[in-house]
Each structure stands twice: as C-alpha cells, then as structure tokens.
Length: 343
Length: 149
Image (cartoon, rainbow over all chains, first blue to last red):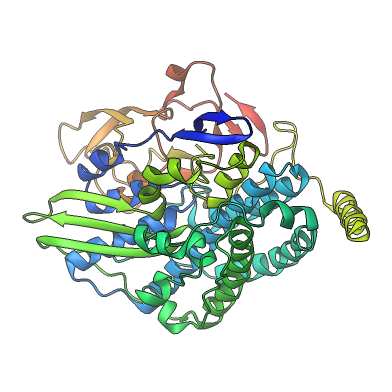
C-alpha cells in the first residue's frame, strides 16, 4: 500500500507527499550477515516482482569477486528465467494502469495471465513468487528433461491469450485520450536520474543493460530495444506492450539456442577483496548490485540499486501543478510503485 | 469514434463469456501442485543421521532439533546407503511461521532425507501452533485426500 498526502487548490495539485515505507530497508543488514549462497536466495525480497534480476545482479557481483566463469548453458537458463520474470512485472504494470482507469475486467484478465507465469515459474524453480533459483556459479536446478518443451508449450498458450488481451486494449480511444500528455518525463531528467526501464524508453532514452552491458545469453541473441518519443503515460503504456512482445520473441530464441549439453557445476571459490558490481535487466530497468569484500569470505557491505529508488526523492515535485484526478493514473503510469502495490 | 467504442464494448463482453473461470473453491476444489513446488518440508527419519546441518544452514533459525548421541558407533544404525547415524533424533521442530521456504536446509542435507514437500501446512488461528514436530506426524493438508491428522 502506498500512502500519499495531497494538498489541492481547487482542481490543481499543490503539493504531493508520497510515503513509501521501506526507506531504510533492513534487508541490507540481514544480507550482509549471511553466506554468499544464502545471500542470493534472500535477495529476492528486494523486489517481489523482479526477484530473478536481483538474484542475478548479486550473483554476478559475487562471481566476479570469485573470478568464476559461468558455463553457456547456465547463462541461457538464467536469461530464460529472467525473461519469464519480466513478464510478471510487465503484467503487473499493465494491470495497475488499467485498474486505475477503472477497467477492472481488463485488469483481472492480465492478472490471470500473470498467474500463468507464476505457475510455470513454480514448475521450473519450485518457488511461485520468490523463485530463489540462482546459486553461485549456476542455477539451483538446471532445466530438467522436458522443461524446455514445458516452457515452449506455456509460451504457445500464453501468446494466444496475450493477443486476445491486446485486442481489448488496443484501439481504445478512451484509454488513449486519458493517457496522452499525462505526466511527461523529459529525456534530460531520465538521463540525469538514470531512470531507465520503460520510463526511459518512453522518453527516447534507449538504454538497456542487456545490450549496453551484455550479460547472460543476451550477446548470443538478436533483439531490438523498443522506444517512443512522447515521454508521456501513453508512450510508457505502449512501450510496456511492446516489451511483452519483445520478451516473448526473446524467449523463443533462447529456447531454440539453449545448449543441450549440461555443463559441470562451477564450484565456488574464496571471495577476493575489492569492490564488485553486477547488473541484470529487469522490466523496470537494470538492477545493480554492489558488493564490497574485505578479507577472505567477508562481505563488508552490500547494496542493490534500481531506478525506482533514485526517483523517489524527486517524485513529489513531479506531481505539482497537475490535475488532482490525474494523480493516481500518473503515478501508476510511472511504474515505480508496482512492487509496493504487491506488498 | 462511437462505432469504435461500440465495437470495443462488444469485444470485451465477448471476452468475458469466452474466458474460462479461474478461481477455485478451496478447500473443496484443490489444484494440483507441481512436483518441485517448495511448499513445506518433510523428513525421512530412516535416512536422517542427526547431523544438525540443516539447523545450522537455516538463515531464519526456524529448525530446532533435539537429538541423543549414540554411545558407540558399532551400535548406531545405518542409512540405506550405509552412512552411520550420528545421533537419534528425538524431536525435529520446524516453525512454519518463520520458514521462508528457501530450501537451503534441503541443499545441505548429506543423505537427502530432508526434502521439499508439496502438501500445505494446515493454516492455524494462532502462529504458535505453526511449529510442527516432524518426528510425530504433523497435521497436513493433502491435496488429494483433504486434511489428515
């Protein structure tokens, strides 16, 4: 739940104070006390809608400290899990926007689609919402025999239902009219704050860590970065719709190109001192993990960053001067509160 | 504009009719859980050597084991793979109110006696009743058979 204190002057919003909670997340402190493998399992709680990206970013940071080389198949499995997880965030985002518009049926239907992703996630990883799927040097459970077919079968069914859902929102003049010119975010602000993800892409900033900081199996895959120029809620909504299509095509490629041979599991090595980073692209933008290691096997400091965190301090100013009735929709369209709406 | 709207409304009504019902009337109708689902834990005490590794690995300290060491190694029983028991487990309590289903305890189990279970732990009114002793058969909800003692 998100609490907001609004001061209005007539129909115009004078000040908006959004209380987020979890400002000082004790998760850091909890993680720093754990062993490296336990950290990866626990970091899911950073964001319940992008758990794989959080795990992967931290795993990359710890693996670079151990100087490990990850086998190609593992990279593919990680990328597959991440792409499946991106669908969860995107479906939640679309559901949140349509729910704010009062289109409850559409919301319920996109949440049904999200539920199907949870089901396949549980089937593959064992965890429905928090998969805790990665370990240092690999995945907790490699794709078993038949898992590739299962995911392919899921994709075939999901794609059809997605197209049916898309028909319900595309070509809706009321939806387009409500979202047009709402909460325009400048490209300069995006670049200043590093506000990547759908907000950045909707403003024309085509940063995507899958392309610009290649990790996992993404260098072996061809894909485009979707972007729009408007910077408004309508552009963000359309970028999210495009991203779902892009993710589905990426999943197809990953399933086709995944190496069939199972590599030997990489053994963990002692952590080397230094400052290490890892990045994984979630649907809301890249999740960046920073780990400081002092002495052997001691993580002295650990932090995770996502675009949403950097934006929260300035959010209050963005809403000033807008129409009060637009506040909720404008907030939902930014996608920064998607995970909080879940908590 | 009006025509587009009417068309859209028609599309949405049609999708309502065509969309299958997704909610189920739990507990009368229970959905199948996947084999790998991490829902609960079970322990096969014929294979559990009482090594306490799961207890140490648990990041939330929700496992509490009471065991009694065997007086001599010769008298200690063996698992099906010939691993000698370290101790006799008298009590194997798990607080399912704290358990986060991370599965780290299952990962460290040397004999594979501890495993993820797909049967739900029965919901309770008071959280203190969610601490179950696996040595004594816990009350669980079996998807195929309903509640059992």
